[in-house]
Image 1 (cartoon, rainbow, N blue to C red):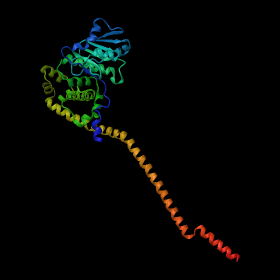
Image 2 (image 1 turned 90 degrees about the vertical axis):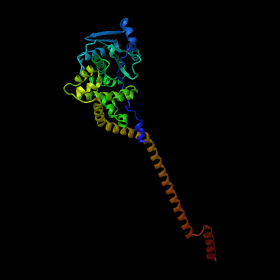
Image 3 (image 1 turned 135 degrees about the vertical axis):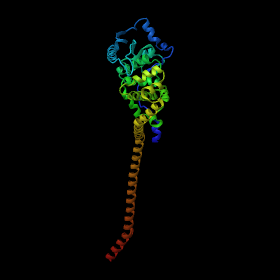
Image 4 (image 1 turned 180 degrees about the horizontal axis):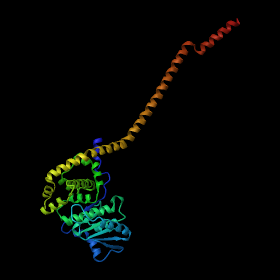
Length: 353
């Protein structure tokens, strides 16, 4: 039963809404036709525009304070790991509600997305102040999305999905993502996927995608840590120059991509595999207690009541047995009342005579 419960527990109890990069394919601009059309004829009614540096922010009055805070943070921290400082002009659109976010983001955005980047358009669509608490820190979310745009400006379409998402996560300092690895049933049971398998995890729903983000973050962080002095700079330069991830890894770190993959799998499995197993066994035991605990309590209560009833019945039976024995003893020592009456009358007659 415990094994069945472990297998039934989802990889992440509550899937956090996330930030994604829209596919950079021909025709991607069609996914934001709604926003483009609104901006073509002027600002949407009730919206305002803020221009500073290379950023333009479009937001409604309800999000004006949030927009200025995020814009200030973006300007102060406008450099990214391993690449030159980006120069492209960026449009940041903050949607006032879920319906407008969905209209602006288009069908390429998953239902669980909190923000979407369109690198080929240098555009970011975000939810505003009305977003739920699971949408995350808006400043960190924007940093993540801007990292997508900066990486595209530097590398074009070369990065794979796992590297793109891992790079944006590392650039945004999202170290908390690794908590998902310590609670992942998939990691505990199936083990660490290959990089090719990791690429597919992003398209399997919110739960698998959450683990994919965490694994991608870990992979890019491991690459960055292999060169403490240069980080990702030499690797990204070699990757761009050769157009090959394999050549980038060889030139920067002196190893093949297969060797890196095996080392990343080994370290991740050693660091998080046991934690994931223990965490999920603990969770399964908790579920076991919650589900079967009341049943065990009711069973013990019934057994206790049944035992008490048996004790009462035994005591009553014993009392009845003692009473019957006492009655038998009294009957043997004293004759019936009628005999005693006749004897008394005979004795009285003798006394009269």
